[in-house]
Amino acid sequence: MTSSQASIGLAPDDAARLKERIRALGRELGFDAVGFAGIELADEAAHLAEWLAAGCHGTMDYMARHAGLRARPADLVPGTVTIISARINYLPAGDAATRAALADPARAAVSVYAHGRDYHKVLRAKLKALAAAVAAEVGPFGHRVFTDSAPVMEVALARNAGLGWRGKHTLLLSRTAGSWFFLGELYTDLALPPDAPVAEHCGTCFACRDACPTGAIVAPYRLDARRCISYLTIELKGAIPEALRPLVGNRIYGCDDCQLACPWNKFARAAGAPDFAQARNGLDTARLLELFGWSEAEFALRMRGSAIRRIGWAKWLSNIAVALGNLRAARGDADGTVAAALRAHADHPHPAVRESVAWALAQGR
Image (cartoon, rainbow, N blue to C red):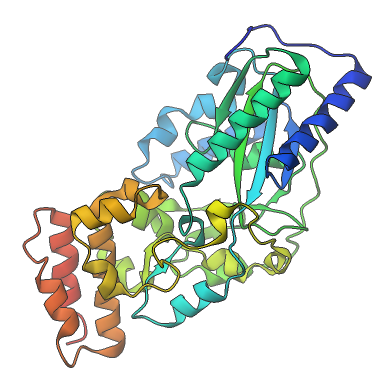
């Protein structure tokens, strides 16, 4: 908290007016929706414990290490009584470019959320601006900003704040905005009544599960990260397990297949923020060989201000090598262009790169 540890109580009418004022301030700052949630997450804590016990978090040890704090917001930030959840759209102008990339094994499929500027920076700045605007209305208040940067159950909190429901792919879904959006939170000591959660609307649909290339959606509302391409290409530090490499295709950073398949995304809204409205570095149309040719310095320069930079150049090369192996398997490599590019990194100092390159060279024989 950046102010007092005692919660700030308000009369019911004042609290209701303040909520609507905060919503209006959020819209002025570029958020597409703002909601309010309490701090009770006992049911989510039980589900998280089951998920962790099953090992579905893979090598993400921090998930288990901070599990208690995820379910108890007031332990993470003492004094918290209300959480403001905010949503901002990131889909540029539609999903046509992503579908086109997936259809061409020579192109690089990069998750849409990473096409623009690093969302951590964008949302954090907007949430800080929202907190400042609220302080201008009510005076100093205790708060702390989070954007996928701490043990926070952002989907559960957004659901409790009435911004949508948890879909079977575990992402938040909205009847009016689909799922192509980022979430951010403002933990506060303002005693405001929570918004009402919305009903679920997935029904009998299993489009997301059926579309998952690796079968990572093992049950409704349950994702096994160990099979998820986003985990394999971002969180996993070593090489992608060999059995899963052919299933990864040309996806080199993240995966959008479950969102592309979801019927609710026909209602997705285009990004309003300039930071997300256009792809940087041509990532929506880039070809694998082009990206594989980047030097470490070029990777660092081009990925400055991008969420991709945090995986590092070695992971970037390892992911692309797998995709190039899948390209060789799909189309062959008659002129040896792909093989030549792969051999240039055959002796790379990182073992994951060497392993992925060796595997790729063995494909398409």
